[in-house]
Length: 140
Image (cartoon, one colour):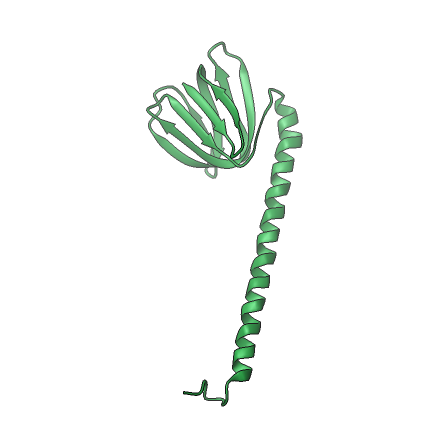
């Protein structure tokens, strides 16, 4: 099988002789062997692992993304960030922790921006109510 892991800026993995892939989505870990049915899933922040034709094990940490299996032979992963490294312990301890921290920071920033947006809408509504000529609503 052929495995490609790409980010918006680079191709992190481009391997042609892949015998097995292990990945993780919201439902848990799963494996892909040659001849797998066409498949599309959203990955979690996790480590994708594969074994090459010679039996060597390889890993890439992904910051979520989309995994697509086509024709049982082509596996494509599109992700925001990916770090390939054969040291699984380092990937899990350092890289995944960084990915999870950034994901949490982005979630908090999104919540804060939504709060600001709602606050602005409330102020606009209060201002419009204060400008209306009578309690009955807007003048016609």
